[in-house]
Image (cartoon, rainbow, N blue to C red; front, side):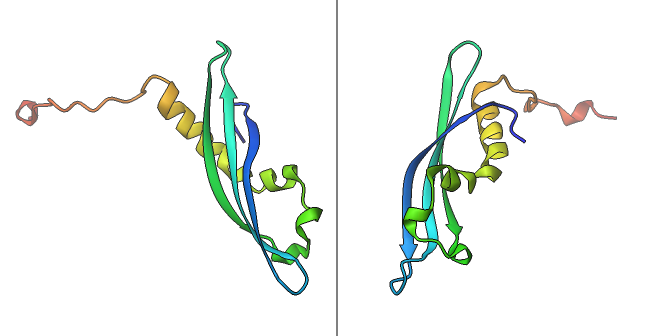
Length: 104
């Protein structure tokens, strides 16, 4: 489940179809995730994905944008992690000047 509410926009959708019946074998898609914070700043990132869909037996016109975007649901937690890494203050710090001679 996503931590941050996002808008998702389909940027690219390229089908690979079976020639004999025009059934889509796979989609190469790219979706832009965008989160707007309470202070009105926004941050976005595009994610590519390939989805095998031949088992659905559908032609290109039988798919919707929403359906293609739904193939990306597993990216919500990845977007959350990227958002936090680029926008929130760090929670950890490496102590590179630690002196091991101080240990007993």
